[in-house]
Length: 256
Image 1 (cartoon, rainbow, N blue to C red):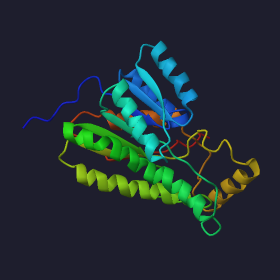
Image 2: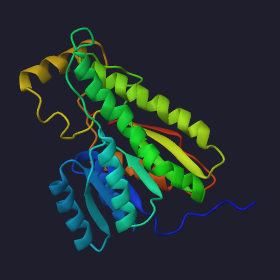
Image 3: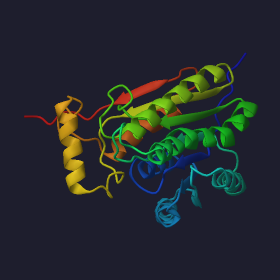
Image 4: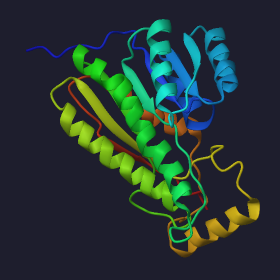
């Protein structure tokens, strides 16, 4: 039996597309000729990026998306189908992190991280994966973190959330085997993004020192969003007949 082939025009969805890794992934996918739906709470930022893609000859739409809200995800999914058609690629990238120790964090703080990082990803799965299965083709890529296998103190909700995300992704991968739909994980190390832009500088300095103390921050090298995007797009577009299930990406240590 012949493998179902991906069409050349593969509609792609990117959550958390307003900046950082998500924006870089959207640019990379559009650069390969894929129509891209950009989703984030900051729709104005997505609109700017979509305009940039269109100016460069690509196809893109910007839609409001809050992965922490069921109604928002459902409206986003309808908008994607109405504007671009059925998606072939879904990049679950939206995430959040609150600085809080496990013992002193409030339940609400942990719930925020779990809702975005785990349940937000599941909302995207529910919105898009059943259609992929019906069409017998598709890729969903979850952007995780090396904090899963190297947990960092001070961000307990984020570590727990990304751990839960990976459990969800692996279960989904098993369930999808033989359907033509591939579920994959990309696990970046330290990356330059806006996720910590609102953190207090003194608080972050103490956090970073604790990571050095526990040996989870070995050097000062950082990945760029474009480097992580290269890994994500590679996983999502690898030829049929093979499956990159988990891809770890780490910054190279600065050369002495």
